[in-house]
Length: 210
Image (cartoon, rainbow, N blue to C red; front, top):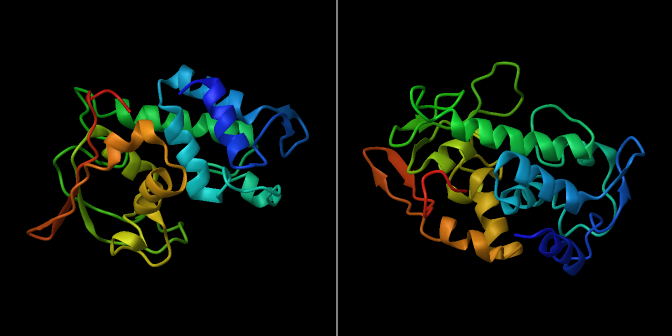
């Protein structure tokens, strides 16, 4: 996805992200440029970053500028920060979560790995989000990275009633934003129960591709 295509997507939806806008601290930023630059720096498909912003704050289709609190959680990456940091943070962390699975480590920082069932939901006692506690077996490294970033299946996949989770991310890509370049990654996912486990098959043409 080119820089021009990102700009056209924001413009098509009449998003507040179009053009040059002030960041939370007043610094002028070009969100399309930031998304493109972060994707190039960290080797992440820019459409994943766009989908994250839509999933977390409906930012791509939001016309009026959201409240500061929402802007500081633009991608849902770690702690609240200015928008430019949120965008870079999401790209960096998704790349780190992906690359952590390469040998010799073989798993993400929170233990997700391909082919190994793991329960969803936060285990951090200081996190106010309720644990979901459902089983997921990642079919690809990308899926393991996504569940490290957002450890929920979400209410649309019989998960937490409090979180949209990865189901919402997929819905934003397929239905709301219609990000066609990502469609082959997600339309092939399969949901099935097998001894209490659920596998999502987010197909990718190359195991290192997003």
